Length: 179
Image (cartoon, rainbow, N blue to C red; front, side, top):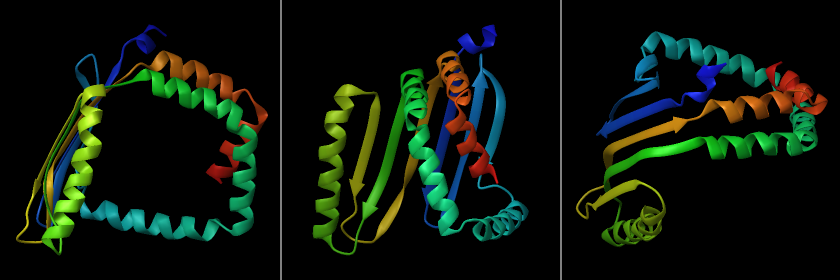
């Protein structure tokens, strides 16, 4: 049980240049990689995922969706405690975006870039984020890098998850979603 006191570290790195996207996702405990995945995965996995998605589409009907929403509404007080504990357990170590942005017209590019800058500048004072947006007024482009490192303390999440799972509406919601 003492391993729950040790924080997990999640790392995500994405790089997009033209039509190619590559990256890596890593989950570490005490600096030891537990799980690592390259992005994108092999092409054979994509075919299997498409088949699974086609099967799942058949399972969802309007009646079932309404039932899930009703169960979610009943479970909300218990899920709220879990969501609060997740929010308190997550610490952003690094958040970095370096992006080249160009739109159809230079005016749209300038307007959109200005909106992003006005939103990210105040956030930089509150959290550790580094957002660098380079406008490209000559062509339509969206290229760049994204990197994020997050620490998660599991003990509070596990305690709240157990509390929530002991409630009947939450168990019914999980059962209905998993069908």
